[in-house]
Length: 287
Length: 337
Image (tube, rainbow over all chains, first blue to last red; front, side, top):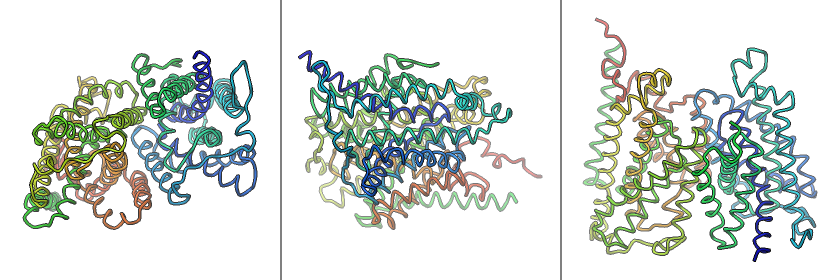
């Protein structure tokens, strides 16, 4: 009994690593550009389909295709911000929300039109089923790898934002756009780079999501909701909090799913709402 | 020229009144199919008016509006079929249930800061939809049909029933429109407009933003619930997927208001009419229908955030349905002697 639950907690925590990767891009776009990207989940799903297509076309393992897609994702994020989102961010939070909402619907239906409604997964060959025996627990190599990537990303982004020169620029623009422009920082460029970084996290999220779970053209919104819950649970603007929030949500879903398969999603939402009502500032608030 | 401008505005108002009059006499002249479509039109108009009240005035962008439509549908079924309440009373119960659910929903949603609030409403809607699928008396995830006996309470012959449902929809739409207009012209609406124009100044003048936003949020819930009940009467079925359909009751509604014009009463009306015209031509295109609507709404936001009505208003030079008080006195311009 105890062993079963210990196993569930460990599996849930590893799933939480994936959820934390979902959340990083959302956290960054809200933290820096002050808007919630409604299409965040759809970007992840779109990139999963891209990885699927490229991996099949190049006959390469999807983990080897990912390094090729990352620069593309950076460029896509950069251009999206520069050409579209930059026109609507600013005083009115309504407009970027509505533009990304429109993008979300366009991506979902574009994918339905382009690749059909079938459910897909990505495959990393033999790695899919490989597992390690640690202290009586059977741990999949892929979930473990996902979790390690999540930790590296969280601390890497934290370093980037708070220890690097680019991070100083980003934070300056976040604090005061006008003042940053006055001292010669181009806020337009900094925003575009930030969105490019979001694109990188989206590509990584897309790869590990596809390896871990099924996806279809309309999976985006459920990924967005997970990312959102993780960000709020962790505390707005706190990247390390996101890791904690992700783990919590992963455990809640795994245990909920164990009690009754149909309750997995609902259990995650209910745990989120409960913690949110008790601690609205999140687990590790930055402010 | 103020005189020609007045003439255009007056003509616009006559068109608007003519449209309202046409809706009143419509059952005498059109067949059941047309009446069904007009009922759908009125329901979507109610949803659009409510979404616009929140997004355009109260600064609450909700992506979870379908939650209250679904709650209304389920409450109507529960009251009329399971509790055997008088069907007309069951429609009122739908409004009541939506209002009651809105109270805890508000406590969750209002704790979130502006940009997050949108996704927060979505989570609440998702939870309610998933919970609806767990209800044994409501057919779990696959839903259940409305018994013939309940439908017959609204008319024994189909034509009679369609007419009754139409009158109900028209009554709800009229009540939604007129009461929202009054709300916007009241202190609450005035405060919200002041807040939109200058938050600090309005706050210094004693406008209580939170109170106004709460009033607006709770205002929309009963109307959404009523729309849910009427939609159920028309479709004769409830199910989590259809009653809580995000595409039908939120996505289309957002596109309607964005394209028609956020932050005006004319916008949702214009948007809903345009939506039905477009639907006649695009519905057969399937997924392309939504792709086109999405692209159109993004293009409109980039060109004129106030939508098509924003563009038209510039050409007309005034509101057809004055929400602000200045609009009454010569559309805010000093009179030239």
